Length: 355
Ligand SMILES: [Mg+2]
Image (cartoon, rainbow, N blue to C red; front, top):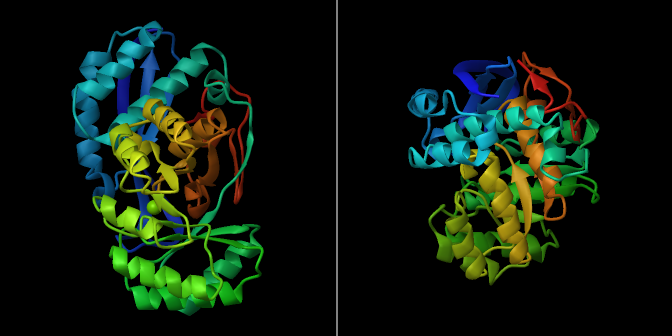
């Protein structure tokens, strides 16, 4: 099976509600779908959503990166899978989302060539998963209503976006905690919005009221490694690193420093599946559990994340793969069931999606 052509297509989809974090507001999804066609007609699908404020990429930079790598892949045989992956990762630095989109398509092809669902090719067996849902940052009443709506849809774990103002953030969490049944799990994501000292003060305020969230995600700036450790040493709430970890090297530094409790793996940060699997293994070697998350992205790349979760189910114990449920609709044919909090992988070969 030789690679004959690689194409990119933009995918646009309306959101049910605007997506608001301390870093950005998004009103509609625009991401990039990659199709890789082989000489026997098999097509592999990949996808990635540029997130300029996190990975530094745009649709234009993703297309340019893929066009740059493309001539080196044309004519390559899927039998030489490792060589192909090495080319994707070494021909150009950074550009992690573009590389991830290419990698996902290559893994889709490889699994199709073996007539296996991707999770089986990667050694996984689990097919049923439960994800949280993101509650956008906003005023307290709007956030509480969004929480009620999510619970009514069956979600028992909510990821609350905060991080624009520590005082307001504490008020938001206290109000949300009071409004919800106690069996609802709260995950907090400040998207780098606080200083280390602000984080400790805020989390102590919550903890003094017996509010211990499942974790606080990325409370401080991505490069504030010492800040993460400062917080972890002073609060009961577990600390999860997201924007601080792209590469295995980033993770190793944090894990060796014992600066975090959990790792958030995202294919758009790890440049795809290969390094996501390695990041899970590395975390496991330190006894640190992982969440697998996504950007605001479409069903192909989210499905790829679910396959990775299956492959590493013993260490990826949390899913934050709600992006498909945030869309009003999308144009793909999906054998993967995305039903709000419930995601079920199918036994068709590859990822389980068709464009
Ligand atoms: Mg995050």
